[in-house]
Length: 362
Ligand code: NAP
Image (cartoon, rainbow, N blue to C red; front, side):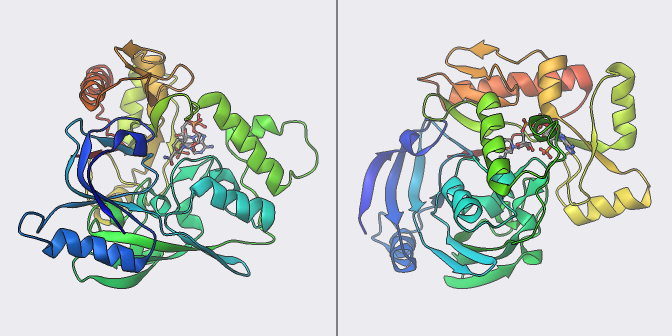
């Protein structure tokens, strides 16, 4: 394994933004990973105690224009093992290739709604990726990690991962863990989830139940109509998280914006600004004020009119107001400035605070 110096990170991210990594290593095995970690932790005087950042598909990050003054490890640990309905995949596997394999080659149900999400298998538990009513946490059985503190391999159960809405223990407490492999428990006879409007409309008029492959194709088609084509345009997907607030706060919002949509939030979802999932939710339950989810895309589109708005090289996508895009030559500084403008506008018009879903690095 080679440790490179001064490697431009922009091409390794879907946003196509970011300066240089001081050091950069592509690892395809645990042994290579250990070698890279040793380099950062106890290399020469010059390189000792370097911060480490692990990059997967680079699909949910905004890397600073100044880059990352440490070691970037690109996780390319591959391999897929099939044990009946259990499928174990290396963290570096491309997510959508993996989904295609489970659906089209194995006929297994569980991941079809998560088709066409950019990124790697290793990123799926970190963000608990979700789409059309399905989240990665529904099928993740365990996650195998390399703990950078103890420098040991550990296996975390689904419960250990403390999954929430686009959230998991890997975003805070276990930030020092590098995901090696993920085990998914899928099903031969499961039922596809078709409750979301876009999928319902796609299959409207169909009397029979669509096959898993048809559901996957539908998701790919629907997403292609809404989300930018990554081969043509830079983006990190949804830039902000959905708004999750107590129902009483939503009722206040409705007085000003009577058409504001909302959905009952999953009980594991954090209420705005909360840092602890469990304590917040127990407060919610006691006060009988369940959390609701208000689509941030709706607020950005209908309240703040940001859909299709451009600031220099950056803009909010014309088909989906939650998706920030880089039309070419955009910088992290431009993204941050535009994001601040959007956060300010939402606060001013609704009193609500929105939070980025994208991880800021460097
Ligand atoms: P959409 O279907 O237009 O829906 C807008 C928002 O309303 C979504 O965020 C969704 O919440 C919520 N929603 C819609 N119907 C719902 C229902 N029946 N029950 C509960 N919540 C409902 O969203 P979109 O922008 O076109 O995206 C399609 C799907 O892809 C969404 O599920 C979105 O979350 C997902 N997506 C995921 C990622 C990611 O994981 N990084 C990135 C982009 C899009 P949910 O977000 O909870 O589904």
